[in-house]
Length: 269
Image (tube, rainbow, N blue to C red):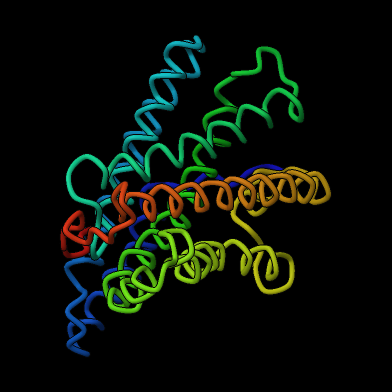
């Protein structure tokens, strides 16, 4: 089956739908039209730029260049996690916790998949390494952001309950354990929903892309199952790490709740 190539006119037609959505938001006074337009413009510019970057990386498939691009992707994901927090850890911690958590989870799972499962030579071939890492970072980023945001918000709202537990003799782990558990659940809900609905409610993106490109449906399904399992593992480990690091930072060495280590910011695009 021959792949149908899209023209820029086709993309403009699709963009009309986004503009219509923005106009509808104005009509309904949702105060979202700017966010919709900015997000659409960012998507267009960022994807066009990454297309050019990937073309250059594929032409010069050297480990240092691939590593540099992977680190850039990680830092960008860390910035997005920070920007989405209503209350975040102050200073470098706000950026560092999410970034380190995604590094631990996404990079570990990606390297494992490339070496133990894909088995390509070389193992860091960009046509496998970059897409896999990108999908893992994107989904892990959502889980980490949701988990941290729930933890910091719930800790702020339930600070009196936490302090009462500390007064009654509980240590910092026991005092915040319920909130930590719920925060991890919050971070894992999107990937659990995605796995539960895959193939029944929705056809996941990678599978759809491979089918549109002409790959046999069964082969596309096998790749999608692999990706879903890797994303679930990466999101789970990343969310667990982020929630643990954040909850640890909310207390000092004497097990006192330190909400002065949080700063309040608004969500941005």
